[in-house]
Length: 184
Figure 1 (cartoon, helix red, strand yellow):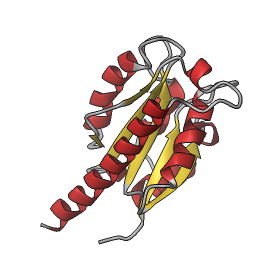
Figure 2 (figure 1 turned 60 degrees about the vertical axis):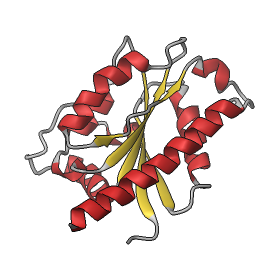
Figure 3 (figure 1 turned 60 degrees about the horizontal axis):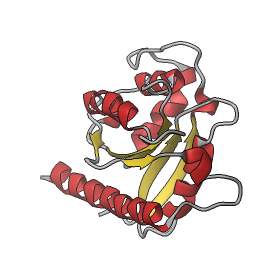
Figure 4 (figure 1 turned 180 degrees about the vertical axis):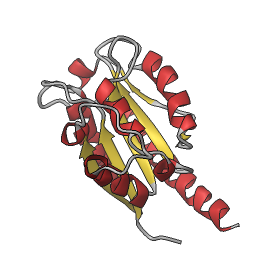
């Protein structure tokens, strides 16, 4: 079994002044304490295609993302809720690959400045992830009042940090479990 799991943390918004960037950096830092994880961050800003490119189309533009996705063992998606949905640039990135995602577990971290923490967006996004063959962890880390929780120089409360650690460990368990199933 692979010693270090290659996890790709995707920051799913290209908006200027995005609070989700602070959340993603925090999740990235906390993931370094989990044994067996090698986490790399991918910013959707670095993969703005400007249009949907189907995964079947050979393209230099999407080739980089496809390679990253293919070589990963799983994902952490940090995605803000915009009007009950997810950012278009995140969907365009997802749509540019397909087979590269199959049977790869993913932790969804939602971000919102409101009280629901991105729950409505998660309900919209999970079926999309499942359609790609991504195995979404049942639990989602909802980040409500993110602008307050991640204000300058402030760390999120202990409960949030405990939930994150628990879900990161679950992600490892899911990936290791999928690896065993693939061998059978």
